[in-house]
Length: 62
Image: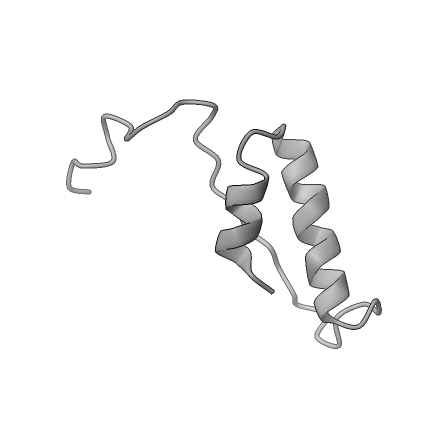
């Protein structure tokens, strides 16, 4: 599964569509069957439709 490629390909899509594509890619990677591990998780951190770097991205964390 090419996650960076999928993210680039779906960058202009609505987040709901991106999740649909990513879940489909995970299912395809599992041969179309549910993952063998019932703890499979897909976490996304979406920062909205902004372009460029967010103001907080370059600031150090607490």
